[in-house]
Length: 248
Image (cartoon, rainbow, N blue to C red; front, side, top):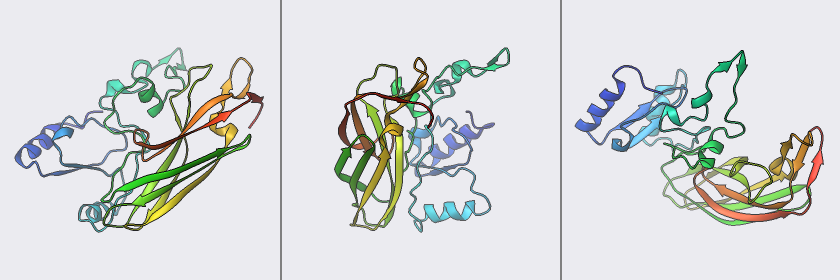
């Protein structure tokens, strides 16, 4: 996860000379930022093709309000990766020692700090979450929330819905992303984020002993927020009966 050569030394020297510096990083995967605490701003640009330079300039000069969110968790160090201890093969077999605890599921389960959480991303405006409504029957979970742009400029917010079992008979992730949507919202205005989730797809896991999918009875929480680490609203629903099935 190291940047090549003396890149980190160069960035550190620039930040020392001028703390009011924006660092733009281009990489296809997470890299380490040992100077992160000294940077006023960091833009991760991925690889955007021929218009990358113009797109970055539009964001930096305020012509475009960014609204992107990370599709992965950004670890602090290579040692923090879920596969760090088993990133190898054994007699031609790939080892999946991390089990289902991949990405944010791993960091949340181990309560391990990251540089940036899954789903994270900021813009030049702010959003306020309110009025969460959740209803559930034996087939669907309906979720809605009000999102208000409380800033001075128009923007867009990616609203994320996670499901969290309050207890389980097996070892499960703390919560899992089940749906998301991006809402363009003008300054001072509000919009409603509405979702209809399949109950069995939202709470089920594959039971190896039964050789079937299982939707386990119990209490579950719906978490709505701007990233896996920034949960703004929480509500609860109950599943009264455990069900098993085969196929999708």
